[in-house]
Length: 163
Image (cartoon, rainbow, N blue to C red; front, side):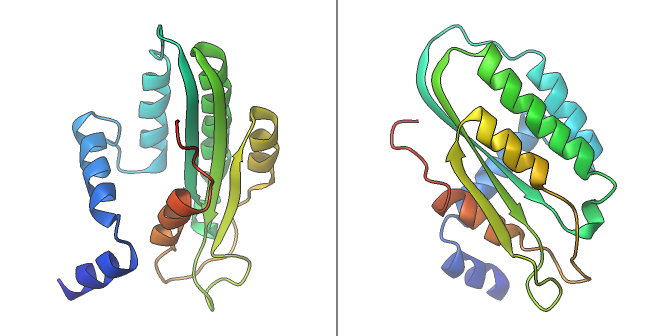
């Protein structure tokens, strides 16, 4: 309980993330035990993506573990992000869609490259170029900086007011 209280002080939006995670579980978006299962579910949901109403703005943010433990799965995860970007752009009626990417690793001294690496909201071309630069490296035995990634996904990508 003390750890949760500290998390809540550091990340006041943590309860919202827990609600979102539970929603995703209920809606069967997070049913898999590993990244491959989650990607398969996302791809199957993507195949049914259609939007008939026009939407002015949408902001889409990807947040991904890029530590060395992801080495065997990073290519598949990046391919899925790229596919989602292209599909959302091509198969929806969103007039102005922007994408962002937040990569996270470990806290020092486990990793000294970065804790988070943020690509603020941008267009399809720039986000695809950024995703291409992401690799899985570093890290150690301590937990990844997941909450830092989530925090930066909220506060450092430049969400637009009406998206």
